[in-house]
Image (cartoon, rainbow, N blue to C red):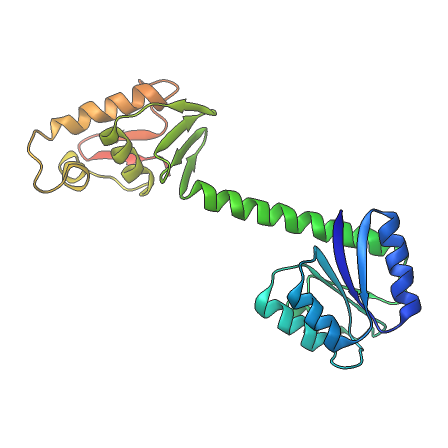
Amino acid sequence: MKRILIIEDNIEIAELERDFLEASAIESVIETDGTKGLERALQEDFDLILLDIMLPGTDGFHICRRIREEKEVPILMVSAKREDMDKIRGLGLGADDYIIKPFSPTELVARVKAHITRYERLTGKAQQKAADGEVLRSGDLEIYVDKHRVYVKGQEISLTNREFELLVFLAKHPGLVFSRDRLFERVWGLDAEGDTATVMVHINRIREKIEPDPAKPIYIETVWGAGYRFKE
């Protein structure tokens, strides 16, 4: 069950909000004092904070600022004030949304659910991105640099270490043309021994593995008389 914190000094309004939220399976905790509400917001974990502006102890603007210094939890500010400057100030301090009293309880529930869902989606993507590390994408091609994996249309492709290094180097510089000598120098190393023709051999092997039609490559293009480039 989702859990939110309601910081609202009008107990009747707070309890009405709680009743509608809990009817939608959202557990709601009420604090009527700004200072106590801030302490609880910082000490406990909530899926969203419903924050009034005019509060005893400390106002909603200060609470919003302090929460944002430590947490990314969604904040929905509530106020009877209709002035645009209050909205701008609240949003500028990091609030995610602003709702004006009186409001429809069903609208409140809808907004709370929408912000919780959006936050979960964004944090889920961030966590997945951190887990995947650096990912290079072009069309149906996905290169997971840190995981040393390559996929085409979701199917994993097996590359040798040198093929992988060459593909990653080109994919990290889309649109730039590199001669065989330059690629040999950058991928094999200045002290490497061998013929730069090995670059062409590796390019052809990579194409056979990742290109829909190796004879008409769409990822690694040949620039005649100049070298190779990865599709921009």
